[in-house]
Length: 277
Image 1 (cartoon, rainbow, N blue to C red):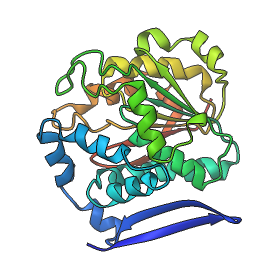
Image 2 (image 1 turned 90 degrees about the vertical axis):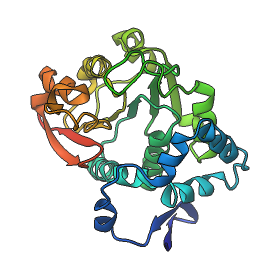
Image 3 (image 1 turned 45 degrees about the vertical axis):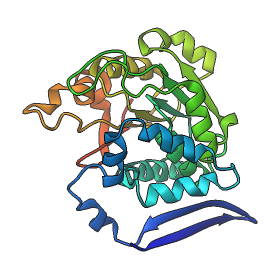
């Protein structure tokens, strides 16, 4: 397989270097298996994922961001399927000229945070702040294929992984704790998150967690704000996927009528933009 390298330069500085497969986006989208072979193999062998992550973080920070991007574009291509939605959202946000913050709920090891940081850098969104909300102890409860404690990465693991992938940690604020205790109006004041045109990424898998997140967000989302639901299609195997997980939580949210669908990947995520107040 062949890869293309793209170098983005702003002024006299290299802003970003990325790798992508030679095939077209349509060809990549035609793949019917949701996860790459590498992802499935690593997940099936006990301890291999942890070993791989430790091997990656052993690279010096001078080269580790490029190692990360190449691995994501070659062996672990799962992220490419999801990133088109992020690309559309960041393009829309940057074009508006009125940029708020990036809030992510359920960050795990940090792959989505890493991608969002890169897109913000590409667009010159230097004032965008990044907030990482996570228990850093795994999922709080069971729901179908999701098990309590799944996706447990410590705050230290998250920060270290993001740093090795090229994220400026000075712009990232981790907010540890389960959502039902941390997502309050007092937390909004503490973090100085005010109403604005924000970009939200919800990756907390569970219905109950998503309900809490949406209630927390309601007072700060102005017209033009966008929400990306990462696990929108996690329950597509059900006869009624709209009654499960993030889809159910969004449909029951009173404010959902103020949003219109902006982008969707049929296997992964779905993005909405607020069109009225």
